[in-house]
Image (cartoon, rainbow, N blue to C red; front, side, top):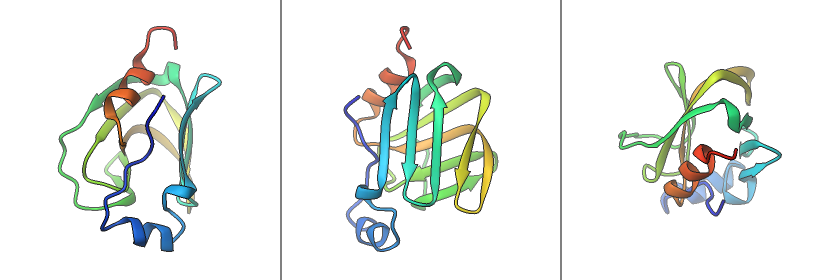
Length: 124
């Protein structure tokens, strides 16, 4: 999979300063899991078999970083390239202050189609 977390120019310096910049992020598929990390603030290893939907999102977001929106989590460095993943069963994840159960995750990525394809390929 050739994609990574996306960062807007305005947010990148702030993210770097607080340890959430591109050098401290990971987005990869390994061993049947999607590994997502944004610095010290968010980590999840999501079994591909738990991802029921992966779709582009046109949602308007006005924040960057790691945020909860109801029962959904937003991990982003940009308002563009958003992909929404829905998990069933929900999976464990960690945010800086606690462990959570992740049902819906919205990510900003450089190539949404690559992430969607990787998460929905039949031979996962």
